[in-house]
Amino acid sequence: MGRESFLKGAFILALAGLVSRSLGAVYRIFLTRLVHTEAMGLFSMAYSIYSVILGLSAVGIPIAISKLVAEKGAEKDARGMMRVFRLAAVLLASSGLVFSVLLFLAAGFLSEHVYQDPRAVYSLRAIAPAIFFVSVMAAFRGFFQGLQRMTPTAASQIIEQVVRVVTMFVLAYLLLPRGLEFAAAGATFGATTGGIAGLTFILVVFLRYRFSQERPAGTQDSTGQDSVGAVFKRLFTLAIPISLAAIVLPIMSFIDSTIVPLRLQAAGYGVREATNLYGQLANIAFPLVNMPTIVTVALAVSLVPAVSEALVSRNYGLIRSRATAALRVTFIFALPAAAGLYLLAVPISDLLYDIPEGGFPLAALAPGMFFLALQQTSSGVLQGLGRSDIPVKNLLLGAAWKLAFTWVLTAVPRFGIQGAALASTIGFGLAAGLNLRAVYQLVGMGFSIVDMLWKPLLATGVMGVVARGTHYFLGFQASASLATLFAILAAALAYGLVLLLIGGIRSRDLEMIPKAGEKIAKVLGKAGLLKK
Image (cartoon, rainbow, N blue to C red):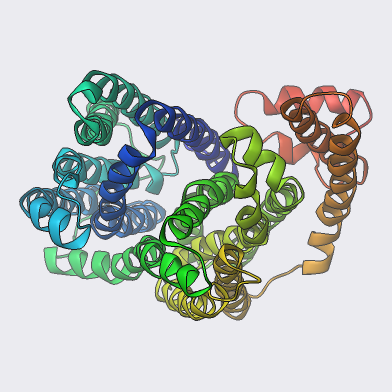
C-alpha cells in the first residue's frame, strides 16, 4: 500500500468509481424492472434527502482531512497527522450519529408533509443508520487520501457498493409480497449494510497501518502541536464551503423535482405526462451524464492533497504542472464522452431503458457533462490551494442561472423538458468558466488551452463521424441494440486510434494506469502507435 503519484491515484479511484457506478447503473435498471417505478419513486425520495444530509456530514470534512494530513506530511509531522485524523473522526462520528437519529425521528413528518406519501416513512428509516457508518468511513478515506494512498478508498468503495447492491435485490425481492413500500425500504437499507461493510474494511486497513508503525518516509513526531480549537477551526474553514458545494446539486435536484413538472404543466402538458418527462430527465439523462465524470471526480479528490503538499513547499511550478496535467486528462476524457452522449442520445436511451424519448433531454444535457467535468477538476485545484470558497460561490452562481433558465425555458412548448436540461448545461458552463479564471489568476497556467484542446477535439470529430456512420449503416442490417453497441465500440476505437496517431496520448500517460499501464505502453510502442 505505497504512496501513489496524484495521476496514478486518480486512475485507481476512477477504476473503483467505474465499477461502483456501473453497479449503480445496473441496479437502477434491474431494480426498476423488479419493483416497478412506483416503488422506485419511494426509493428516490429517501435517497434525495440522504444525499443532502450526507453532503453536510460526510463530504467537506474528509477533503479537509486530506488537505491537512498532506500539509502535515509535507512538514514531516507524523504526530500532527494522527491528531488531525482523530479529531476529525470524532467530529464526523458525532455529526453522523446526530443526523442519523434526526432523520429516523423525522421520517414520519417528512413522509406526510414534505413528500406527501406516508409510505415513504419506511424507506427513510431504513436509510437513516447509513449516515453514521458512511460518515465514519469518510474520515478514514480522508486520512489515506491525505497520504496520497488511494487504494484503501477505492477498495472500500467497491466493497460498499457490492454489499449495497446485493442487499437491495435480496431484500426488495423478499419484501415485495408485503407491498411496494416495504420493497422500497428493503432496497434503501442497502445503503446501511454497504456502509457497514465499507467501514469494516477500511478500519482493518487502518489498524494494519498503525500496528505496523508505518509512516511516510522522513516523518517524525513534532515537539509541539496545534490546539483542539485550532484544528477544528481549520477543518471547518476548509470543510464548510466544500460541504455547501456538495449539497448545491442535490438541493437543485430537489427543487427541479418541484418546479420542472409545474413548468411543464404551464407549457400545456398534463400532470401524468409532466411527471413522466421529469422522470426521463432525473432517472435517464442525469445518471448517464454523471457516469463519465468518474475520472474527473477522482482527479479532484487526488488533486487536493497533491496541490496542498506542493503549496506547503511553495513549489508553484509543481502546482502548475499538476493542474495542467489534470486539465489535460479532463479534456481527453470529457470531450468524447459529451460528444458521444449527444450524438447517440436516443439510441443509448433506447438500448439501456427501452425509452428512446429519454434521449431528447439527454442530448440537451450532454454538453453540460463537459462543463461539469471541468468544474470538478478546477474545484480540486482551488480546494488544494485552500480556496474552497471560490468553487462554492461559482457553483451557487451557476445554480442561480440554472434555476432562472429552468423556470423560463421549461414552460416554452418548443423546449419543454429539453429546456430544463439546457438550463443545467448553462449553469455548469458558467461555474466551470469562473473556476478556470480563478485558477489562472491564482497560479497562472503555463499552457495554451488551444494547444491542449485541439488534439482531443480533432479525435472527437473523427469519432463523431464514425459513431453516426456506423449506427446509420448497421441500422439497416442489425437490430437497434446491436447497431448502438457497435457504434459505441467503433467510436471508442476510432477516438483512441486517432489520439495515438497525433500524439494526444504518450507513453508516460499510459504508465500512470495501475498494473496494466506499462504493458500497454510497451505493446503500443512496438507497434509504432505511441510517442514518448
